Image (cartoon, rainbow, N blue to C red; front, side):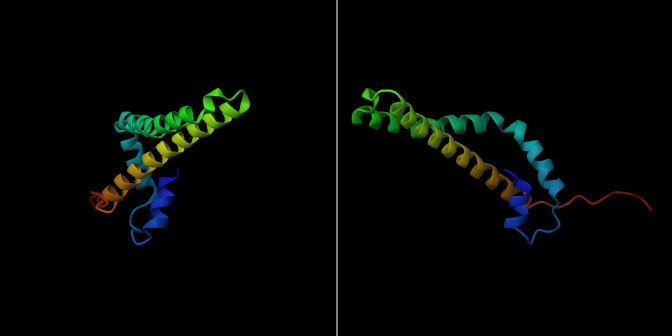
Length: 112
């Protein structure tokens, strides 16, 4: 997702923040929160997959043969991955919003 474009589109009044400022903040938070974001994705997948697989098991889907069973299982997994990605994007957007709306651009210290 292009978070810089999202920020500029969502908060047009903050014209003093450039795309480079947003990109530098994203590059700075990406390595620091990579483990946390992966844990969130795994938890979201578990939140969706465990109830869905339990419901499918009791509905008798696991006794179906071939492509129908795999199509249902893969669609549930795809939904879980989308849910995890959406949670990750929501967290990054909230962090960017809190950081960039309080952002003061550093002044240059050049002497003239």
